Length: 275
Image (cartoon, rainbow, N blue to C red; front, side):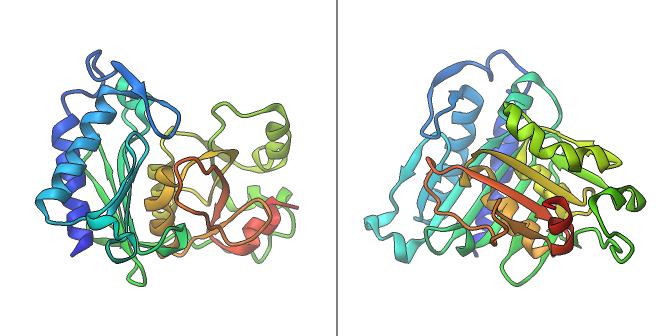
């Protein structure tokens, strides 16, 4: 079962990198990864743990990784073997600084697009907690079913009413432009609480678990490797994901493709945010 392989791979990453987190050795800059960021030792060690696990499991998908780029599956037969999308360390900056918020993000897709992701695992590299999902079967936190927060929006007529529901909005603002800050001004001003932790996949899981009412990233910087697993976990928990134009979020899985998205507990909330 593919989900079990992903879970085992994430556990192997957890045990492999635990002594590198927050260390000078783990933070060593090695080379530029396929995704464009500098790969650190902890990133490469984590990816190797995933690759070793799938090899030992006799599983040969095409691998799409933030550091390694694309590694073709057995006989280059992507259609039969599918795609494993990995960000073996999501939140590398947190990991190398020892900030306790980073994860291993792994997803399996039957085709070369986000909407074809059918299995997903996100493992918290500080706690060992596991978020998982399979398409059509719901989302789970340590094998217990989770759902997005059920908000009553019947009395919410405009974004200015969000304070009445004690809203918590997550957003990634690292490297954000001035124009994007202006675009976010209204929603951030009218939210009771705003959160930014530094690892998109895990933040999407927090959204899926009901900790946040929405999670927003409009920077146009996120790759499929950053969010393929969180995408499925959020959707299977009842969340809705949209692009900036209000279309249901989808994308190819190329590491060079960049995304912006809104993850919300219900479509009405998206419409309020975008008013």
